[in-house]
Structures are given as C-alpha cells and as structure tokens.
Image (cartoon, rainbow, N blue to C red):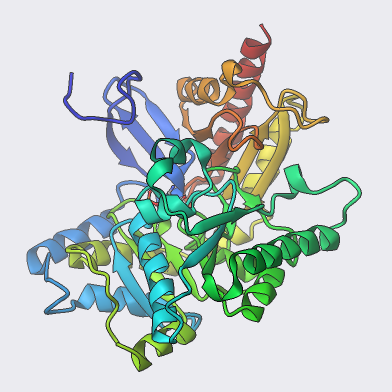
Length: 443
Ligand code: PMP
C-alpha cells in the first residue's frame, strides 16, 4: 500500500522497476514492451547511459539558477538547437506541455498588446482536441471528458470549430478540396461571428493525439486555415507536444503541410522522458513585436529553463541527431505502419490505421463499414489495455466515444530506435490482444 494519489482511487497500477531500451521491468515480475513510449514520450528508449552521464555531470556542475538573474549553458545550447533550422527565432523553456501551451496563449495575447490591439483576447480552437490540463490549456481543449468538471470556470473567450478529421467527418460525396473549403469557411464564419478584431489566435494540434488517435489533416487544410487567419490578422498556435520533435518522421509535423505556425509548443519527445521539459517556439513576427514593444514576456515559472532539464533534453536531441533516428522513423518503408496493417488487416473491429511515422493510431469500431463505435459499456479500450499488458505490451488507449465521434482507439508510438524484432513483437502481440477483446465483447 502506497500513499501516492495516482490517476484513479479504484484502479490498481503495476510498479515499474526499471527500463532498458524499449522494455520496462515490473516489480511483480515480467517485462513489458513500452510500445507507446508512455504517451509518445520515450523516443530513444529507457536507461540510456549517455543521458544518465550527462545528467550526473550537470548535477554536480549546476542544477539551478533563477532566470531573473542568469541563463545557463545547457538552456542556451538547447534553445539554439531548437531554432537552428531557421523556422523559429526564439525558444522559451518550461517544464511540461501544459506550461508550454499556457505560455503560447499568453504570448499570443501579449503579441496583440504589443501591436496595439489589446482587444484581441479570443481564441478559436477545435473540438476533439487536447492541449493540456492547466486552465488556459484546458479552455482551448475540446476534450469533453477532461473539461466537464471544470466547465463552469473555463474561459468563455474560446470557441471551438470542427477539427479536420476526414475518417469521421468528410462527406462521402465530398472530395478533399471541398472538405477543406468547408472547414476554412467555418473558421472564417466563426471569426466574423465573434468579431475579427477580437481574435488573438487559432489553436490546433498538427496531428491530433489523445482525442482522435493520430488523425492527420487532409491535404491543404493547414494552408487554408493559414490563409483565413492571415486575412484577419489572427496568429496560429501549433501544438506539437505529442506529434513533434521527430515522431512524425520530420522534426515538425507541419513540415508535411506547407504551412508553419507563428507559435509552436513541443514537450514529450523533447526530453524523451528523462526530464520534465517543454518549450514554446516563436517566429520572427512574434519575437520582433515583443522586442519592438515592451521587450518583457510577462510570464515566468521558478523552474523555467532549468539547467538540469535542459541538459537532459540536449543530450536526448544530440543522440537523435547523431544516430539519425528521425530519418529512421521517416524512411525504412514505413516499418511500423506496414506491420500494423499486415497484422491487423483481417481483424473485423479495425476501422482505421492512421498517423505518420512512429505516431500511429488504430481505431476500433463495432461496425467499421457504417462507422458505428462500440458502446461505452463494452469498454473496448480498457479491455485492450489489459489484454495487451498481459501479452507484455503497453499501449496508449483512449476509451469510449470521445466528444461523441471517435471510436475506441490506441496510439502506437514506440521509441525511434526500437529494433525490427521489437516492431514485429508489437504487431504480433497487438493482433493477439485485439482478437481476445473482439471475442470478449462479442460474448
Ligand atoms: N498538448 C498535447 C497535444 C498533448 O498530447 C498533451 C499531453 N498529452 C499536452 C498538450 C499537455 O502536456 P503535459 O501533459 O506535458 O502538460
């Protein structure tokens, strides 16, 4: 019995003792392949000695300075690494994804203040989205389950438009261009409805994680949203906390989209699970407005730009570069998807396998043809999580119909350096687990 308040007072959780590469060893005995990298966090695997040594060295050199007085070498080096592709002007380092989103929302508001438009205080986000648990981040999130308790105190300056979710929302008679045009019109209409001069930013995950099982946008979607936002002076905030930092097969998932956000958030894969860290990246437009205006971003955390966290993330990112791990995710004939399609192709509950690189979602439906989800009583995802664990596989499940649309799904997001044998193992065990759950829910 432990006194930790974990996620649920009802469920029991296994204690993980140690991790090595893609594997976790449990206190109760046995090993589990961490096929979701936790929640798309672990990108170079567990127990990396190089990261451990870098952290140990930094821990004796310098662990903390307050940013009101000093910066530090690891924080500077990490910010330089995050901006060295020229897409962003500056990186603001924080300790989590939610903090990065909170920073992004505040930065968008401050950008407009610096530009002489303090009345731009509204955000437009999308349904079926998740941007974090703090109040600002939750206010822009569409995830109904995570919002419901706090709904009365969430911001009333946020509106939600449709996500781009072709599998569920594109009409059968509608081609991609028509679908994208419909969504662009919806955003345009919403901006006009609330008043174009009141909107600060449009917020979207490039590939939608927790609510939609790795839903990628239709071709041209983000460029069309950009055109609408540009027409009305609205900033774009891209949330790449889950899908970014190489997981899609490119450093930024928006590199597939012919568009670039003004403000971007990253987290999970940035520290690869070794340290709690997130970052907000801002482009020249935003940075120039800040620099020409007050110059001071009015938002600080005691642990922002933490030297030890920055050093851990820096080593993780150096390893990813030196070992060309993003290239490995991108090329190699789409190794994860190929395996999942092969292993799950004839399972009758599998409706869709989607996503990019090592960020793939599998959606399960009672009737894939008619797109009818399982009832929440069937508990498909919860059963699948348990069945997979008993097969030695940890997956990231999302249960029930989320926001009334998506069926049950799991995210498969292994470390970028998982071996071919480990990818085989994931596909094989997932297929066995799905077969068991299909049988159980039918019984
Ligand atoms: N945005 C997205 C897209 C996420 O997936 C998450 C975490 N699941 C967050 C924001 C919040 O990040 P954190 O849990 O680190 O606060």
